[in-house]
Amino acid sequence: MNSLSIYVARESGLHKLNPLTKFVLSLCILLGGLAFSNALAGYVILFAIVTPLAMFGGVTKRMYQLVFNISWPLILSVFLIQSFFWGAGTPLFEIGPVSPKLEGVLFAFKSSGRILYVMANFILFSLTTRPDTLMISLKQAGLPGGLAYIIVSTLQLIPQYAAKANIILDAQRSRGLETQGNIVTRARALLPLVLPLVISSLLEVEERAIAIEARAFNSNRVETSILEIPDSQSQKTARAGMIIITILLIAGRFLWQLSS
Image 1 (cartoon, helix red, strand yellow):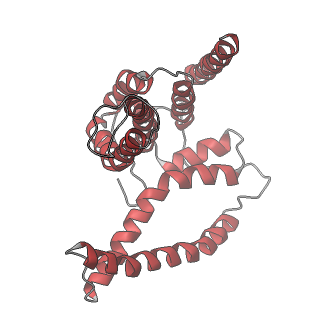
Image 2: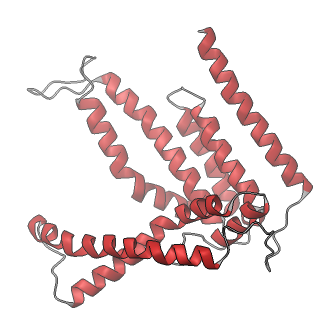
Image 3: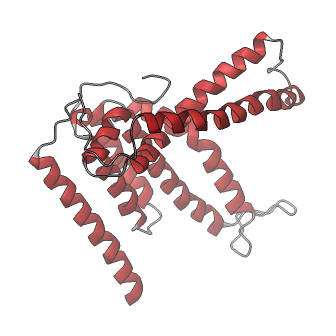
């Protein structure tokens, strides 16, 4: 793993799949899961589909570490907001003005399942797919270079910002900035940390634009690559099958809603 991605090198069957196959699989899991309205759907997808895939790729522990670190603040806020500010509903208990509602807790439980499976699905794809091979595969499949770049840069966004933030934090600490202590001390340190991060990110936009032009992203000529990315007929068939199944699931959900 490097600072530009969370990719973890493994000799697994999942890693050896063509990046397009993993991209289509992740997209189908994402869209297919949204077709189910059951409260347990997100958890079923997480433990019955995403987790076995992570075990197949040998990245289960790392995936769950990242999912927990990223999602727990969001899930906690969802439970607090939905349960305490639901409005009319069945109170679980009452302590003065505090009265969490059962309907809000159930909705938060359902939403948390979706958050977890979407997060795990995205992280699993990032852990098992090299950004450079994904870029090449997307462009060879006919995707415009600009759109392929947006997809790949999204996968690299979090690790890039995390690495940059750590560099800025170390630099400010070397200049005597106090970043540890009570909440007041940490609040004072926030601006000297965030401001350089925002400014450096804005300055990086021009550098990225120059790099894109230098790599002839807007050229109409067919690109060649030194990397050979294997893609078998069975994987092409599997991708088509996954797309068809996902379309049928979404169409079935839509027709069921119309008939009910």
